[in-house]
Length: 145
Image 1 (cartoon, rainbow, N blue to C red):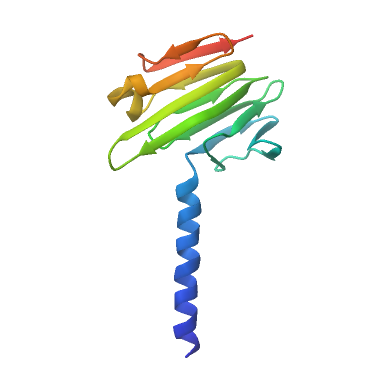
Image 2 (cartoon, helix red, strand yellow; image 1 turned 90 degrees about the vertical axis):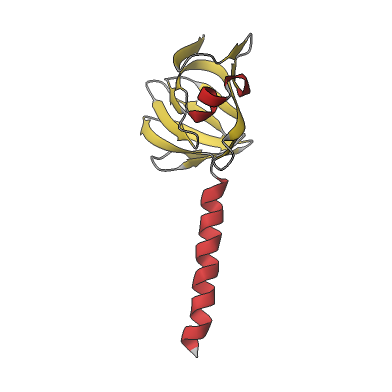
């Protein structure tokens, strides 16, 4: 009798875990130095394997850096003393549709574009306080002093 009650509970917990994983739009692959991630007043220490979602801000300290991979295969390498916002991160792996807007407020970011930029380059942008970059290449660096 107890086995019958445990199995539905295990399945429910597995489904909840899968839904939490689905909520992430990307994964931190490498973190060096002091790096924080979060939105609003909620910041957490970045760790490799940690998730990032739309509206997250990535802050790197002096000499710090972070590398993250988004669901469409886009790679972002954030340099030291940087502030980067994941303004819009949407990608549907079934339809291959979505939008990506990254806002670099200061510092530098190297972007190696993924599937979305290859199939729909007009739907990928990098913004800075003074400009908007429409993505047409596959590997580039943007720097904001």
